[in-house]
Length: 330
Image 1: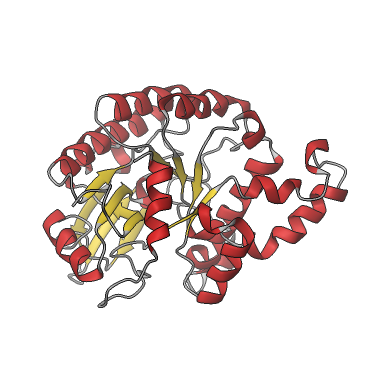
Image 2 (image 1 turned 120 degrees about the vertical axis):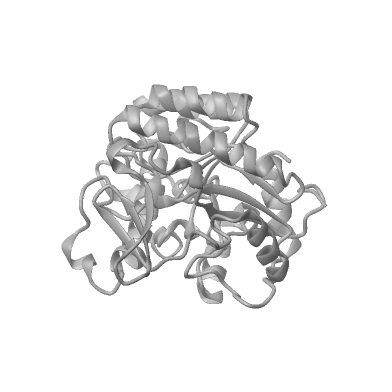
């Protein structure tokens, strides 16, 4: 088997790498056992209780492959853990972590070339260092692109990121965006999101929707017409809000002139890519009708709390794998 013949290709699958622990200075990360005997994962002042990373598919590649077989997933492209993007810490510590993460991930996937590939972590608070690490990760380590957060103190449409976007095009690799929980190493979450896991359930969707709006309204896709960007979780609420955003593009005084004509916002939306990890057939149907079948790829958040179809094989149409091969240039 290889990605060329894989029937199911999962592009939303995070890995936790033992070798990266302690490589971000005082921010860790660190995996220990709490007083109650449950696992404790520390990132800076953030504590995650009760998630079993060690001895699970997150950290053991043989357990991952076995779980993939049970789920009917032929190939996975592994990405950094969103808890450890480290986009708001000192650039030196962030780069230290990213380099170790990329070295370790590249070595891991090289052991399973017919089942696994990897995407690079980047220190996005330093665009110049991100370019250098992307070049190293792709050119020297053989990773297939990069996977970063949606927020890092620099707007996604900021001119400081244009050289990174140009380099992605020159290297012919995609760039993936996925939120991180607010307050791990950056600004805290909006207080009303503290209850009911709303930072995870609603905050992530808000970050993804904001990312799509910024990329389109901010002109990123017009400045970089050959750039391939993929947003997690179906782009948050963008399928539901597309009509409202398009109306704003037509009428609001701040909207760019080139977006004012009928269909211009929608045309740019259909140039982005989205994973289909949206949890309901109705949502997926709306997303597909809004962005087009040819812009979707399979995503599972594999081994995470919301992995679909846990305990049974995932049913995915073959065109999702074909789309993944186009996005990944494979």
